[in-house]
Image 1: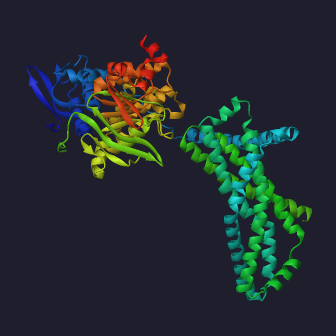
Image 2: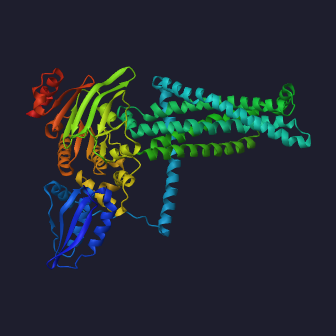
Image 3: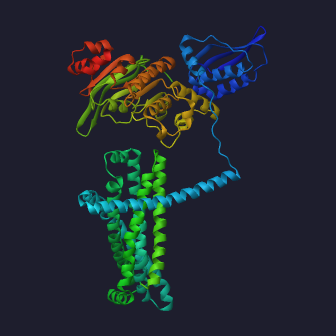
Length: 377
Length: 258
């Protein structure tokens, strides 16, 4: 059967014959490469070296290439090295690899100070481009909204309702559960620490203000960025990959009007609703813990809550919701439309959609905090 | 590897296989042999189950009953190692190329090589260039990503990847669809050349009459979940089966035959 491959050096007259034998196939490639590397050292040592392959029992591209590589290195001396004993079956394969040009050098990355500075410069430009892209998308969405307002038949109600179901209705259970648990935790921690001063009842003030002003809407916005922002990016990104967005454009549709506007609108409607549900669930959870763990009965809790919070706290929280929704939506859609051909690119942009979405939500929350403090709300 | 008792010149032996999706029977008791060293063209109406049969043979679609032997090994009874051995000996060109989009052309071609063989990077790079040359591409495309290639180039790179391990058997699923007639003609020529050079057996699903005329040694026709005819081009032309008559004597067929 096919034995292990060999390459024997046999002296013939004043020359040398390299006799290949056995199966020169991919399986034995590491061994073959070693033998060929050894034989290559003979380059120029003798006046005429020939390669004899008559004993080769099996040959594939790997073996044929290694014989070709050997022939090329031996030929570098100037004299063409002949290959003898090639069977008819394999001659076309050997001819095929003979046409192969030498492998091109792979690019190597420069790692120097200038390289680092170049990297820095490039990333600054990239960040500037990202911000510009967001502003561009905001403008595009506003323009599309304007067009739709002038021509309401162009509004895509079905699509909007579909997305509203996805981002709002289907998000209710998880949003309710998480905010309920956070309400419970805030309340428990408050009671545990306030008890040391005998100020248990103030937990109601803390819970009310914290949940209504900050935690409720912030938590919901972060969950929506992770849940729906990523979905938007992935949807638009895979449509971009399959040229569906180009198809829309060539049919005379504006992708922003058809794809982005319904999604944005759904998100802007959904987030205040979810934030309201979140607020209520957190208060309920907090109240429940206050009753069972802190011994503040529901009637006392509600009375205290009515004194502690005003309608302002509630409005401040909910005013933020649509703005955060717009930020999440714009980031998600911009990232989605930036996706290029590969699966890796889709993954990268989905990740950066969520990361940027959450980042901008928190930045917006800070800006709002300063704003409301200065107008005294 | 000991020779199996049923080892004949049939490299693929499909016996009585049925495939069902829900209530729809796609393949119903189908038999097929593919002989060593031949190029088998596999035709049939759209939706007849040509791709399903291919995917069943390579193990991507489960079958209800039947037996599939490749290289004389029963794929259902084979151990994991034996199956891997078979998979190393075949190459598959998917309809859309199925190149890994996050890897460059070079990495795509080297992927199976890296998995199965322990080669030096230099040898892998040289083999990549050789394979690209075989499918008619220049070494410059090696560092491009699949999204930067044209449709014809994607098919060629996918073929180079299918050939990366020097397989004995290659499955081509509609290799010429989406190529211009000249590109398709070149591709047929390429398949023929490679078959001669590497001694391949080729299982080619196609809709392209030109490919059937120029590249294939034998043609099998699928209809109603069975092979309704198998044989040379002359057999196909002589057949009285209505679908075969319509297919091989239709307007497009006459144009091809001239």
